[in-house]
Image (cartoon, rainbow, N blue to C red; front, side, top):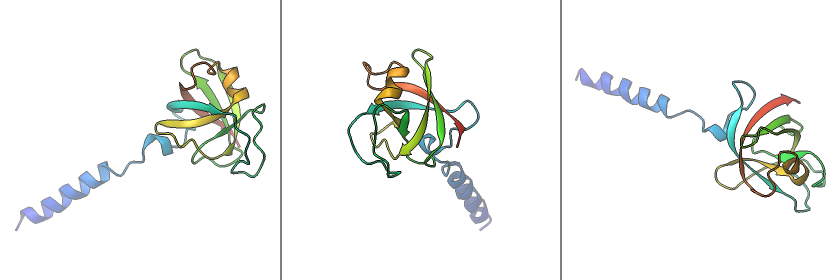
Length: 125
């Protein structure tokens, strides 16, 4: 019965290795930021923060960052960046980490592509 404690230890180690949060829920503050895909939206709506969405403002939707968080979004294809304020929840499309307003998407030149690889860096609250 000596192998039973070893088995328990092995199971515990395996479970610990698989308990890490997926990249889309990590806080993109330090360490170079969070990498993923960005999209944009421009449909009129009330945002999760309660304000009316305005496609002309530099705002964005993120699943977990607190409302009001300021985030630098860097388009990895061209190096252009924009700072946006989180005021909504989303995106809910698989693999995407942020939805930008149309104004923010224009600044980083992603309108034609629709979806681009980006790096997110929290710059303030």
